[in-house]
Length: 420
Image (cartoon, rainbow, N blue to C red; front, side, top):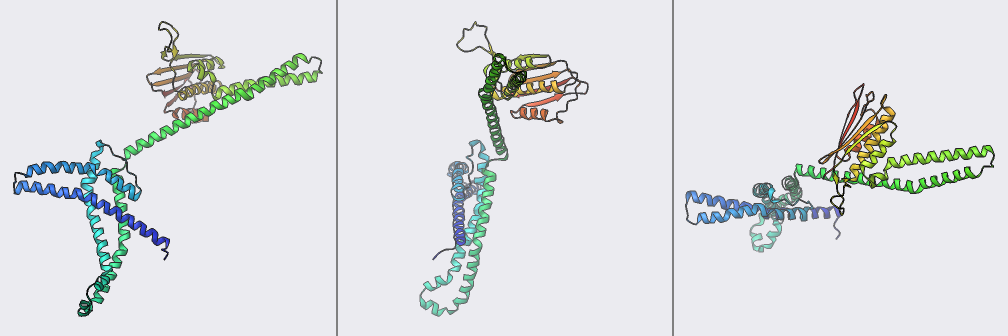
């Protein structure tokens, strides 16, 4: 005989729910019995004093404590093995939640569990009442011929009650899962803290991956396309210098191609530096910012104040100190903030004659301040460049502030976290 899949799933679900409720009844009944025992001992000390009662009470109270704390692991096993619900392993400092579930909520749930199991047993017994009757001697059935009608009523009532057991059991299981997750599960604050930690780690991974990808592109451009352009420019320069007997039109074409090749090399150099400058990895932030200031189209006053470390293995009296290196992501963000800010000053700051860049490390904060003497009026929310800077700063949990009143001056302040 083949059981229909729908009926088979219903039977499996009912068996699981009944097993879950029966296991819960066992675990919830123990604290209830301990409660009753302790209450009876306390009442005995008041109304019927006994010399042995304090000793037994001193033994029962630790048992109640152990039950409130030690039943958490069996409850976790019950939820995981029978319902597939994973509850976290609670620490001892969260014992209040464990006591609340095992000693207060559990004795209340056991009442519902006992009622449901009693209904199940009564339903099975009532639905099989005619079977029980046929097991008695036939003389009793002959002397009590009116058993058929009451037995039929009991059978129908038992079948109806039996049909009501699965939805009631499912509802009780859902109630226990809801209560278990609320009391023994991860609290809202812990869940938010864990979520923030996961998001921070994933964002840091995304930032590192993007930075690694920029380095790869910079390396590929430097070793591939840039070298080909340099070789092309050299060949054109050699042709220009050696092929002097060509017609003027051909000479002009070679000259134009040579100039275009050199311009392409310069543009590619700027693009490579914009992706990720090699000097930032090799010499650090101070040297990379010095190169930016030297290439800027307007005078830039640069001041970098970073703590220094003496390299290991060198004599102590050697005056060669190197700036402390920070996380590569922080150095990259600081570099690109200064680079984009100087580019914006050159393009958009009207009447600006000079700029000032100050980089200071204060404890675990790297502060970058860029100022110019232009006419001001920059709106951080109006352009995509400043928005992109703010987003890049926030990608490493930094803060971005900008002050640009009409008439100037304009000041951009960035603070980046850099733990020691």
